[in-house]
View (cartoon, protein in one colour):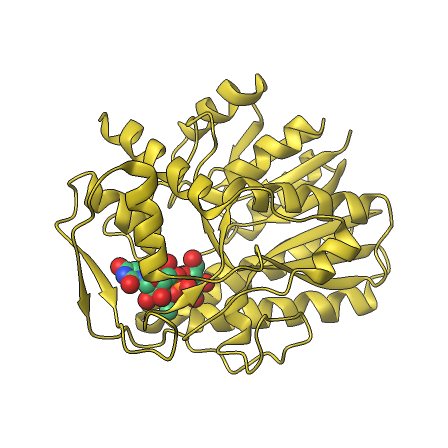
Length: 340
Ligand code: UD1
């Protein structure tokens, strides 16, 4: 059992990962500033695992607080770093907020990890680093394309910062996990996604529309060069994704990594179009979804899905849950949140 720090551990992917870490016997300490999460998530985690993780309400931008944290928890063996801002549009309007939140805090964290006798670091990255890849499915060797937004850029720069630091800090080992599209909720329905305001992502928009919170889903374009004209993405169940974090962390703790800095794609390997997601929702929920086709959304790539070979071969990890499983769990969660 190791003491693991999870930053952003009360958020969507963070909370599901905390559950899987606890299930594997790790002691979890969460740092979260509650800017896009709630302390109530702790109750959900406790309801599932029977263990309440240690929680420190810290804003990672406060360097002195980060230093004080590592003085108090000098026995931390691993860090999974989720805490970051992730709204693409907001990042275009306020780039400095994104560079401060996502890059400044990463630097503070790495400075602390440098001082530890041994540090194992897992970074939340995104398939957004590939942009529109020339070849599908997307392997880890696909070139990183110029970022479409400051948010995307923070993931690219973040990866570079970690890679450069690993080169000169022999006690630091890191893995960047490039997520495709995480959706769904824990099967217990104790934790799930809690978007603030109008959801920007497809699945929460679908479930909120069906729950009567939104009037209609806008499908952004049906004239793309895909079989049904809508964009294709690789939707991965958040519980599968959470498990991948534990596997990646174990790889570092057990010193099975082949390089001090590695990258892995986390996806199912299967692409689904927007209309296929809508149909999956209608099938598993038995509800008719109100949607209309509108203009394309600026910045959307046509198609992105993962080549899963490296994760399978090197991590021994692959997804177990289907798109229908994920959509059903998202819908069950939405109904619970809305009291339906
Ligand atoms: C988006 C971000 C990406 C980020 C990821 C984090 C953009 C352009 N990309 O990815 O950088 O890493 O979220 O979760 O914002 N769609 C609709 N109607 C909607 C919402 C979405 O048709 O109301 C479509 C989109 O056009 C897209 C698909 O659904 O084809 C998935 O969209 P979304 O959930 O926003 O994810 P990404 O665009 O893949």
